[in-house]
Structures are given as C-alpha cells and as structure tokens.
Length: 250
Ligand code: ADP
Ligand code: MG
Image (cartoon, rainbow, N blue to C red; front, side, top):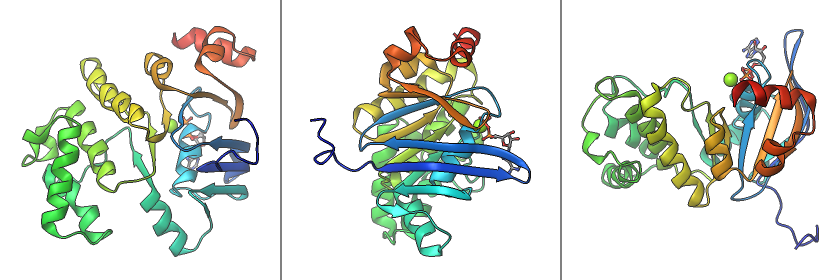
C-alpha cells in the first residue's frame, strides 16, 4: 500500500510555491499534495495566506515560483489551461457570489449551458438534481435575495456541483452566516465529503474538521507550518504557533 510506485498520483500537487503581492510575500515555499478523494482542512490566522493558497489552485491568483499540478495539468498562463482548470476545480466563496439578477435555477444552469454546452433541458434537469442534493429544490424559481444566507450558500454549492468538478475548494463557506445557519451548510459539506469528493476547505469549524478531514493544514505568515491527521493535530500539535492558534479558537 505504501509502495510509492503503486500509489496514484496526487490530484493536486504544489511544489515550493511562492507568491508576492508587490513586496509582500503571501505564500512562502508552500508544498502540498492532495490525493483523489482526500479531504483537507486548512486553518490559520487571518492574513496567513489561506485564501491565496486555494485561489492559486483554481488560478484566481497566479503563482510566481514553484509548480502547481492540478488534475494532471501544470498551471501556466495559457487560456487553455485556465479553461480546463475551471472545469476541474469548483470554488465556494464566503460571500456566496451568486448572480443577483438571476433566479436560483438560472444561476445553476448558466455554467453548464455556456461552458459545458448542455441543452436548456439537460441543464435544468442537472440543476434540479443538485438542488435536491442540497435540499432546496423548492427554491428554484426565487432570486438569491429572497433566500436566507444558509440557503444561498447551499445554492452556491449546488452551482459548483452542476459543473461536475473533480475538486471543490471552499473558502470560509460559513464565516458570513448567522450561527443558526452554519449547521445546514456544514451538513451538506459533510455529505459531499462522504460521497468521495476531493475537497480543500478553509474553515475554523473544527467540529467539521474532526468529522471529515483526512489531513489538517495549519498556515501562518504565508507558510504551511504543520500538517497532520486530525487526531494528531488536535491532541498534539507539533509547533507552538499551532498550539497557540488552537487554544484561541477551540
Ligand atoms: P487569509 O485567507 O489567510 O486571511 P489571504 O490569503 O487572503 O489570507 O492574504 C494573505 C496576505 O496577502 C494578507 O496579508 C493580505 O493582505 C495579502 N493579500 C491578499 N490578496 C491581496 C491582493 N490582491 N493584493 C495585495 N495583498 C493581498
Ligand atoms: Mg481568507
């Protein structure tokens, strides 16, 4: 099982990735492998580079040094790679980012029709499948503003699923939600994790992390300071920085 020759290649591989914003180094020599079906939870203080890390994986940001290979594609500046990468990698944002002038159903059918070339009928059928999966098929005809925050985030997850990505990235998906709505979104994410989706989730919801994470990643000041299994991570963090962080949030 541990024979490197027979192990499947990682679906995401970051090697010594660095990224600056002007003079500020947001990522410092970051290396991370994610296997097919693996669930990775990333945590760390505000400004530590968590969003930058996952935004580099779907190329909302470009890295300047090191290598990122996603689903067999080496990320580069060509348009071709950008389109392919967005087909493989879905992203769910803190602020939902739904199109406010489109209904829920239209939000879900737009990508499959425009990007994947599905017929209206097929796109609608697919949209309803995923709205059922996030348990809000009854909201299809509404506009986002008429939904609760938790419902909007579930629509955003369904919209990502409609593109049938191989990898889903979540950037603090429950941070903008009222407390009573966090559970309904986490429940959908747990279900997704159990279905075998490869996921990287930036979150401070440590109950969620304990339930679904295969690997915990702690970032600070642009570096991956520590990775480990949830058991090891929560009971015996290796670094003082991580221990201090966990004390603050748990
Ligand atoms: P986190 O998600 O962990 O809070 P980010 O990845 O958003 O951290 O940001 C890491 C650092 O990079 C922060 O100091 C932030 O101010 C800086 N940064 C992020 N995006 C930009 C940008 N577009 N331009 C300049 N600085 C940025
Ligand atoms: Mg962030």
